[in-house]
Image 1 (cartoon, helix red, strand yellow):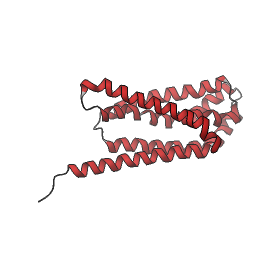
Image 2 (cartoon, one colour):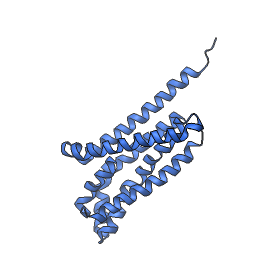
Image 3 (cartoon, one colour):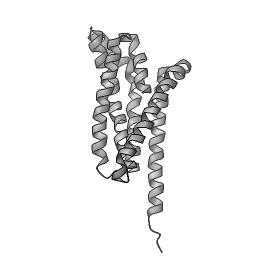
Image 4 (cartoon, helix red, strand yellow):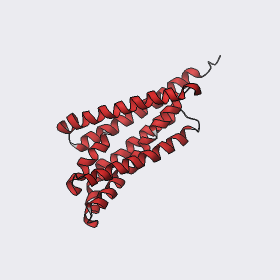
Length: 188
């Protein structure tokens, strides 16, 4: 949600901040999340592990960084080639946010797969996960909009998000290695 919220600030200097700009941003995020949910669900059926889960976070971290590095030249190009701000903002939102948000969308269904140990409780696990996820999104939105944007520039905030994703991915991979080290039988 933090990146989606910042999307409005990123696009505003070129396309404004009218309702159709926000419509473009929200549409791109909703579509890319839906594809991410499908891909994450599919990926979770193939030998799900904490290590692969961490890899999703690491890939998301890397895919968020082009927003910082290439937003200005991408939007300048689109702005100078597409006169209608509705379609320009839709294309700019797609170019900047589609791929990273697909990767981020993969996290939720993969999380469900890792947390469900008893199929009888899968609904309860999914409900708790979506509660925590939505609560986190609400907190992230309010903290980003009320505090972060007042203290930091947009690129700094997005870089911090990318670093946080990278740290979480690294932590998941390390935890996977620690857990698997303790599972290996001792050699006599």
